[in-house]
Length: 189
Image 1 (cartoon, rainbow, N blue to C red):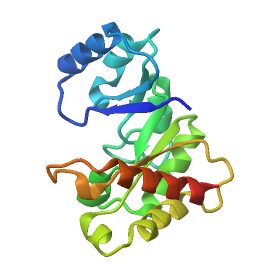
Image 2 (cartoon, rainbow, N blue to C red):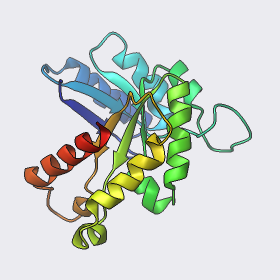
Image 3 (cartoon, rainbow, N blue to C red):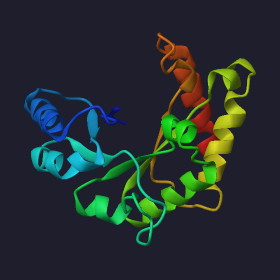
């Protein structure tokens, strides 16, 4: 399996800066990895134009849990697919913590994304408090179970996001990441 690098641009770049970054990425040599670019919603159509025909894939940072309806400010997974997105990030720690997205909401978004032929990138991981209390596996299992209970088609990417390392001034150790990956793979099988 080839490594996947996901470039989540968050809300850091303007449309012009997003186009410039995509242009630079497409011109740079790379091999051996798959790359998924996730610009802000407003930059998606512009970045799609730059990435078209390149080996880089286009993704979105989030989607609605419904395909259509009266959901002010939400973005339909079907519209993302029509713009050229192939994947969507779901369950990112910022959305779980700052916007109080629940496991149930993320599961609904997962189903909507899958129905729109988007590959979900499900972000799972534990906070510093959960890590210190030895609850990593419990937390990740809860996050996975909420999405996968009753689902037989599991074509997605699972991204371990060690929330405890974000903004802490240090990266998670490779041993911590490998241990979480092994646990997730075991649970999924």
